[in-house]
Length: 288
Image (cartoon, rainbow, N blue to C red; front, side, top):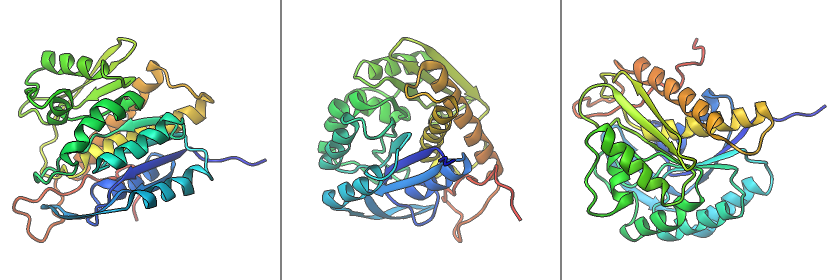
């Protein structure tokens, strides 16, 4: 009798330092028990100090990579990270509209922590108008949420404003929004999950004091994608309801919290001043 593992796909750029992008996604997929597959959208020269160069991949080759995976494997869940250009956004929109991606999570990567723009200006409208409506979940941080709502929208400063902005984003078409509160300056971290059905859940957890936050957004969206893939296979369902999504998000946030805590005292850079190292993706994997 044959069987198969849950399968997840990441559509994103690279990170040679291993903390973010495709590299973080694959490590997270492995840690959360799924077979990870990828389509690389850009080669990115970056490390714990920031992005120094981006080399875009031709749209045709990104499409060929997607064909290689989707024509051969039943993908349970997909996440996209750095898409970069309007044409790449439209390419992924077409795949999602054809129901090829399974449960689809959008991590709307726009600007690196270092300030380097990772999404072309003319692509923002494509994300707002075309990508959000075909997504099952989007996972913006506070600055990304404000930008997705409108160029002049202020960044949310409190839980009430976060909830209001999450609802505005749901109105743009995604089935659910997880608005991440990690960019708030003080206190516990509060993330709010709002679904198109109207359910609202706030996840609160202690803030981990650490400079090693490189790739946290990538890691969280990958962990949610993996958790959805696992739960879909375990429960033999195709549709992801609010209860299953809530469980997947909760599991993923707990994993990220452990990964942050485990790497809180790491120093991986030769020049630690101003460096932001990775989280410990292997926190749940036995080491030798």
